[in-house]
Amino acid sequence: QEAYRSARTNLMFLPQQTEGRGQILVITSANMGEGKSTSCANLSIVLAQNGKRVLLIDCDMRSPKQSKLMDYPQSPGLSEYLAGIESILTVRRNEHVDTLDVVTAGSTPPNPAELLSSPKMQKLLTGVSQEYDYIMLDTPPINLVADALVVKAQVDGYVLIVRANHTNRTELDHALLRLQQVEAHVFGFMLNDIDQK
Image (cartoon, rainbow, N blue to C red):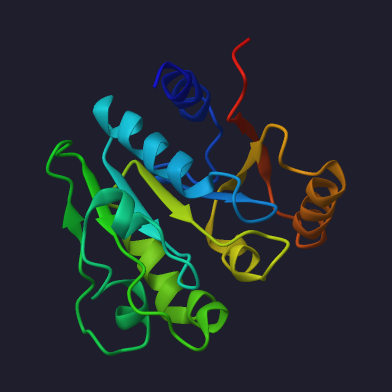
């Protein structure tokens, strides 16, 4: 937990794209199994514990994890709202940290990238950035699908989760190349699962 508090301090010093609105950050990784969802959840918690208003949105509609990590129903969630099945976005208040709200991914749709790149998603992010200090987007890994890249225009930047003794340097280079191709702002990396010895 202390490591996440240290990361929180770094996040709080990041430059903002637009004054007067919350920071929108994408938490992602190169590939699966690198701990991005757990890291996203823990970062959201420590930011909220510091008094910040935080909205965590599970944008990984292909392999959602936040509903299990936070112990919420997966549906209704983001996919139902973006697809027009639900007219109101379901936002769940964390019972342990009252400044943390969570939007689960919802049911797995056939077209996640299309939903994330839709005008409705853009409008959603614009709206919530007026209400929260931090909006944390848990997206699928960059090397697998384009979902993390399609929100680039709406976000302040990306944080890549790197797992020690697991993430391959070539795969990480490939993820960075994909981000550079869309001129995404990469704030940095978080190395997790480190052997403290």
